[in-house]
Picture 1 (tube, protein in one colour):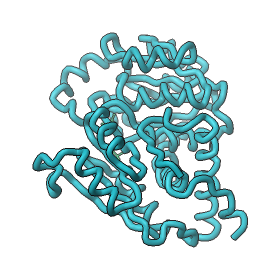
Picture 2 (cartoon, protein in one colour):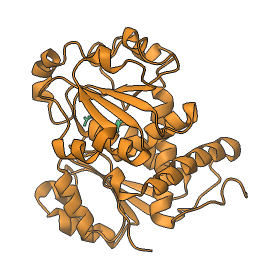
Picture 3 (spheres, rainbow, N blue to C red):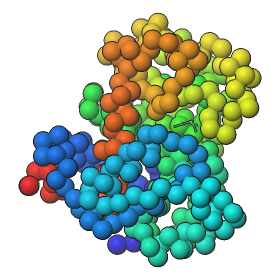
Picture 4 (cartoon, rainbow, N blue to C red):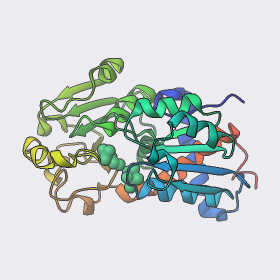
Length: 311
Ligand code: CP
Ligand code: NVA
């Protein structure tokens, strides 16, 4: 099987992505019914390179590998030669000789592409400055569990045109739904990513108008990792873009609210929004585990239809 990477949602076909979502739901249900009895990764190792902080991504990938009978290695630039200037291409070649897949959280998306080009084992993007595709697998899975097929529905992104926003745009393309991106002027998503999505995606600047009649509302922090020094300026620039219960009241009555987390209560969301029954963020966070199991299984073993139905 040729090595496949997962650097953006565009690396898989729409049909493969739909398979992954259904497979993630089956894996989750199988875990609930049978416990962690499915161990397809015996003696397999995932290297996890983290150049930025993480709670959910690290725990979900590490737990996924453990429950699947394999092993995950946490690597940070502080403790490896990556932090002392060993070229990323050399690191990719070395790791390819030893492990079965590599997960990378880093700053530069171009750097990740360089790493993947030198790797002979699958490389997974666990967040770059430009994309966070693993989060979108969990997000679409959560939507699917709550409301069924996302095709033809309307979601609104309120906030920064950042890595998460770019992956929502790619998700709109791949899963065929409408996306309204509502951001302050000057914080729009990258033009090429927006243009490639065609008329599925629009950019707006008035949050109260943007949420009107939508099926799904989502947002993210105003200052992403690496933008800490812009925090004060962004707080001022994003005034009026806080997602509130009153905003959700303007959406459809069965709207759901997603947030990749971590959340800053009192900034991009009201202090009480995560307690609102329309917020499904804990289920969304937990789905990182199941969605990434489906992704790892697909990249290492290809399609698997047999478990949990035939065990
Ligand atoms: N949503 C997400 O990726 O969280 P972490 O930064 O904690 O991994
Ligand atoms: N946009 C955020 C997402 C964190 C999961 C960041 O890059 O920091």
